[in-house]
Image (cartoon, rainbow, N blue to C red; front, side):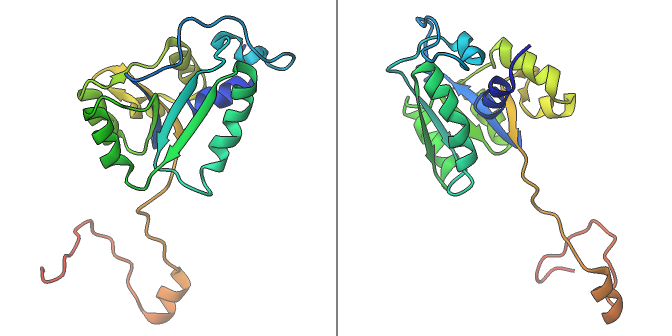
Length: 194
């Protein structure tokens, strides 16, 4: 059974609302041996000794929201010897494309939308998720969540977080007091159009 620390790291880093995606530039390697850290590092044993390796993680999640990711990386870094470099950009989508086309993709990208994930996958820059991530998602997520990270039948990215956007809230009390009607149709109106 995987420990909570490992699940947390895999769920965060390896991980459709925000999707974590392995890109072809991945530097964490196959020549690893046992874990660097001692007691408490058992959950990270499969990663081996990554001393001197740097893992780049690119995202659109900036301060202060990025702190939860930084906090999650600390035990991984301590137990493996790797350094996780989190880089955030508000211009993430455009810059990710530039990096991919320039041959310098990050090792892992936290992708904010399934459509962007599909574009990156179809560009040839993505690697399917490792079996350990597939197993983790199959155990802890619903099929709907797994579908967000699946492109053309292949699973690439685990859910890392969910952000609710585009929901309209209103106060029924205020609407009632002012005689406002709650819209019920799905037709949107654009300025100057009826």
